[in-house]
Length: 455
Ligand code: FEO
Image (cartoon, rainbow, N blue to C red; front, top):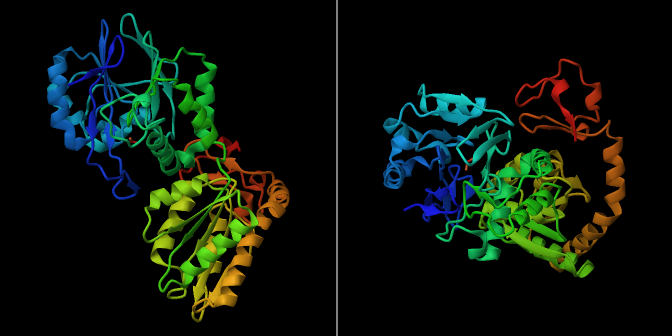
């Protein structure tokens, strides 16, 4: 059954209470999710997005209870990852000639996924589609979080259909933001941002400011996952602006793995040292092999600093720490400080290797890697506490020096407007972006140097 959300709009999506992982196993979704689809009935009728493929037949069957499918004049696809476009083939079997409004990149993605020659209408920012008393305005939002993404604003009912933006993997029958547990809702919204959107924060800031500058009346933000922001929709916009701006709280997260509890003992002792030095800072310890990786990344996103520890195994670090470091690198957290530690028996390579990986991921390393031989005794435990205390002091001491170093590192960072890759001179032996050859290209998507924007 559809649920009416405004004069002209009915929610016709699917709540997926069972979903426990997303993007394969890359993202945990412990509170389920939903695939929100919206049916707009004015003089003309438009469907905004569909649902994930496993629910395609159910979606089309329920939609046909809501409306004669042949009465749908337009399909609008804001983003074409399979969780939103997956039911298109089933739907298009019924109404194969219905025009699909999407960005040019959206068309390429749909064609790449489903290999069908449907009736595509490419739209770009500012294009409008009149439905009668209401109309749709399209706003391209590339890299939030795919190249094809766009938002659709509906005048009249004043709804922004934002697809993944402002979404949460959060199953609820209640639909609206004020009808659910606020702690759970905001945790899922933040986890979503930290794990999916953080990499594209510069795009988020720019797009939100662009939309705010349009001064559009806004009664609801209707994303494609989770609740609809109906009660004070500006609250999630403000959160996004904060999250996109190198977000951090007065928190330090200690992430570790351990084989025989020596590195765990180090982590706990370092944590005690941090607490002794600064009782205001919230310290959290998480075991990379036992705790949920996406919860760990969310804690790192919130933190001003992290310590990452692993025993040395096979002259390197553990599997769990390795996977986490790769995810940390990909998400490109900004403005965070770090150090590494771990126990060892002979070579003791892991802390230095972790420290290098954190530096490569953009963390400012404020303390030398720290290691302890075999099982820490009382003296080693005390030394770990002292390391924790000195880490807290290094966070403050190095702040200005760190900034100076960034400024002097060759004219600052530049960001690729297409894929979000950030050129940081500090990661390229201090070579300024301006000094790169003119034919230099983005190493990820091959966009030319001239298209890069100063960060
Ligand atoms: Fe919810 Fe990017 O798909």
